[in-house]
Image 1 (cartoon, helix red, strand yellow):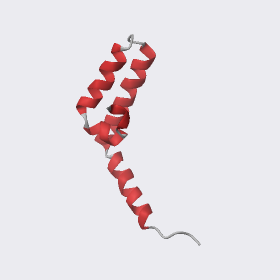
Image 2 (cartoon, one colour):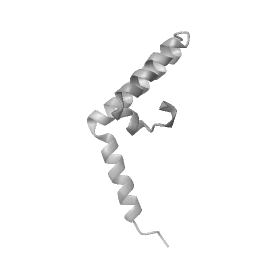
Image 3 (cartoon, one colour):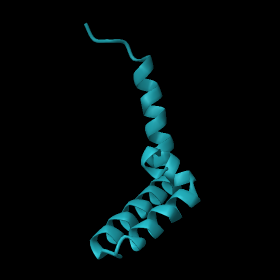
Image 4 (cartoon, helix red, strand yellow):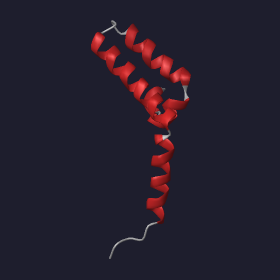
Length: 70
């Protein structure tokens, strides 16, 4: 389920965030894997809170309107 989500979608889906974290703990509780998942979820949530996803989306929209260089 969560592998198909973009980071922006993950930021909006608390259930998917919880699932990622619980799955990391369930797989032997490997400290490295748990740290990676916790860091990624924290990063995604921080990006959303600070408005970075909206900024990137606006930049992508601007790129579509730009003329192709000759």
